[in-house]
Image (cartoon, rainbow, N blue to C red; front, top):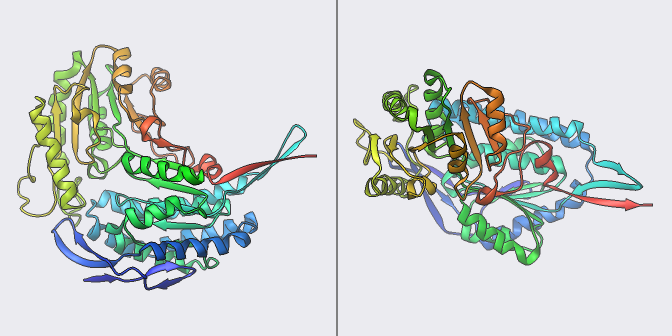
Amino acid sequence: MRIIDKIYIDGQFTTPHGEETADLYNPSTEEKIGTVRLGDLEDARTAIAAAKRAFPAFSRVTKEERMGMLERLGDAVAARDSELTDAMATEYGAPQYFTSFAVTHAASSFRHMAEVLRDYDFTQRIGRAEVKMQPIGVTAAITPWNSNYGFICAKLATAIAAGTTIVIKPSEMSAIQTQLLTECLHEAGLPKGVFNIVNGRGDLVGAEFSRHPDIAKVSFTGSTAVGKQILRTGVETLKRVTLELGGKGPNIILDDAELDVAIPAVLRVGLMNSGQACIAGTRILVSEARKAEVIDRLRAEITTFKPGAPSDPTVMIGPMISQKQYDRVQSYIKLGLDEGAELIAGGPGRPQGISHGWFSQPTVFANVTNDMRIAREEIFGPVLSVITYRDEEDAIRIANDTSYGLQAYLHGKDIERMQVLADSLDCGRVVINAAPHEPLAPFGGMKQSGIGREFGPFGLEAFLEPKAILA
């Protein structure tokens, strides 16, 4: 049983003023594995004050010094890879294919941002003006539970590179992971107050970060509903915001696609992170001419996506994070049946042979129309919908007929044609034939998938303000 009873403020672990506690669970077993003591408004304000004190000096630290800090942070996280991986497996339940790269990915966030910083010119000449890119001020990051290390490290890395100080509110459901990660970050030896981490509820700590006048910018990853609330709250002080929100990604199989290659890729990007991913391609679009063939292949291939606990290296689908999330996913599976969709794989309840844990069957519906709720609302679980289109123009229309616009997928043989089609998709990223992640490319959404971009130079500039000096 882990007892998490410290938060991190002003360079040290300290007991929160808040006295409320929350239970921590292993989602693979439903067993209670610990408790976390949550910070309150006073803790949030103390963290903000520490970041504010540290900002003037830190904002003047040289680029070379910040690059050194980023390298030390990356090394410190990588040094405890096995412990961090074990904590994620226990507290989050993700399969080994996910946990095996999670820590490496988190550590690389610092190194990638150091690379961006190395080549970035903070002073530019535009006509007669000298334009200086200056740190925006004290920033706040609010991060979710579905990739705890990655989100914290990416936002912290950007803040360090920009010369801003930061307060971070991670998900309280990831407190064991956060504790270990914070210990790593502390080992890097950054100046006091540069980063501060407060476990706490979103409606207390997160809300205070969103409204406090000393916070200049909020970077949030999470649901669209909460993102809208942060935006509304920040209006009073005209906070800058980066919001990376929900998604309902189109996963388009073109008529020239080789199904031996496309179908496994379609399911991988649709069921990634056990379906608990905003970038998952959960709407599978297929032409009417190939519908029957694709459905048969999906029905056969999904049997290879084994659900189970992270102790089994062959598992591809882990549990939902909580009983609440499990119930939400189950309600959408029932809704799909009620809406008249055809169940071709999976369905309600746990997978066969699993009697406990918050496991949901990997589920595929066919004969889905784009006006059904299972096609329009983010489920955040392993539930996919097959939607047919007449031609490529119709496919683009269906793909764009959504309130979201985060990430889309194209599968086919004609790369040049797919690049043309990508230009017509209303989303922040388009992935062709399951291309690998590019860590320096901008990431973020259109429409209700968010505001602003993260990663690379675009992410760095979101933490900077341009100042023009005319002489």
